[in-house]
Length: 337
Image (cartoon, rainbow, N blue to C red):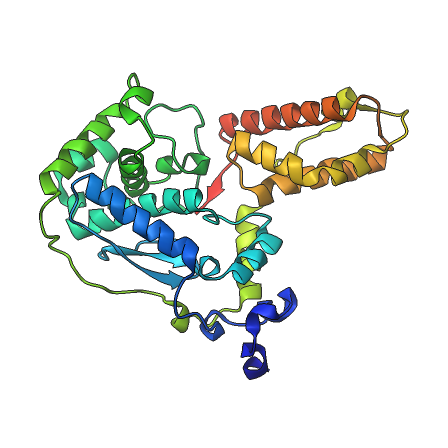
């Protein structure tokens, strides 16, 4: 079965690919997207006067292990067919464009350079960011409007752990388009950025004391099937606000009209998902679960479209964005790590 799938594997159906284990994927290199991102990352490091260059390898997710001056990138970035599979399973591709891939690489490089120069041992680093020995929580409640942390990756990721705060701050500092001195001028997070700036000037030309090229958890060692991987990943990204949406639905839709509200929402589901994810930072898969609830409740109540479609779309984006942000601010929503 596996041998037959290996022949022209990229032409196989999603169901056939999902039956494969990671170790069965015939991936020995990455395509142009990753190569271009790595090349641009090296340019940014060079422009910042940094001698350090992280090594990268393929695994199931993004991560940089303790003590390793490099990071793993997810398998789906290695081939366009796998990116299509990722989109079909998760409704979006994290790192699937050069811009988003670079954003994630900057973050992982923050971890890698932390490891390469043993920066977490420094007292000032610990004072500003917290103790790196703190255990990683299983989940955390993001504070969307906190100014103690930079805003880079979604979900207020810098707030999850001191090491993530360091990596996120480094990523903002490295990004040539961040204009961090202006954007964070009156934020408490500026002190962290200024520390990163001073620290990188200090270590920039030095040879890293940790130079191993270890590659923990490579694809070749992973026995989990892609089907199991995506089942677990979808559960992690699931969003269940457990809210009553009837009030919002009644404001936007009514009982009279030619088009059913459920059909209207289904038709524009992709657009709505992208817009709400953009404004809230919630992954597209999580937003889609909320939209699914709206569609089902609209169908149950027999609601109809009673205004112009463009206005209804704006109203839905506004209402759901407000509800999601209120939920995030309440502290009841927790992000799984």
